[in-house]
Amino acid sequence: MTAKIKLNAASGGGSFSIQAPSSSANNRVMTLPDSADGTILTTTNPKAGNIIQVVSTTKTDHFSHNTSTSTEITGLNVTITPTSSSNKIFLNIAVNFGADSNAYAGFNIKRDSTLIAVTTAVDGNDTRRQSSFGGHSGSNNRTFLTGVNFLDSPGDTNAHTYKIFVATLYSNLAISINRAHTTSDNLYDQGMVSTITAMEVAA
Image (cartoon, rainbow, N blue to C red):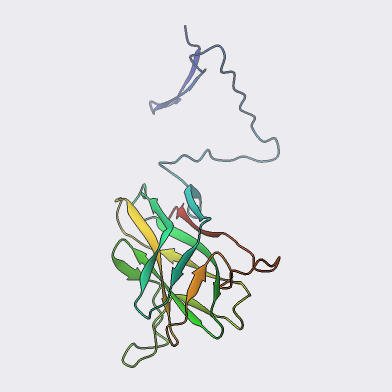
């Protein structure tokens, strides 16, 4: 028989039960703080700012792109399903890249097929690109870290996939994700990883 302790409210209110695990192999201990009173938070009633869930993807392989047409970086995406339509999704994006000498890289974020985190510092009415973040290569044997943090508001409880897109912005010079542009057998022509992490934040 599973042991249970039930506390009833003194004035006809609800009740609260503490029940032990059903398996004898699963012994659990709950320790209450002795310094102050507190409130137990749950996933259905979290405090604003609490992290509800974390989903992360690490891309370890190489990806290359050499046109001004924005293309998705394969394998650098993450899918998360908010538990409440009022909650936010905090994105932490870190992209390591190398490039041909004097190349400019522009990166964008999409939630499913919708562009998000788009700058308004450039209005898009001329040739200047509206990116989410970017970078520039000084030489073709170096690597660079770029990225951005962004708090998104999907406004529903559907599954959403966040994707990273890249374009090269000068003379079709190649952008190499996760390694230096050069492939010489030198210690400094190194490979790296890139990550995208999505965290659901309680509103």
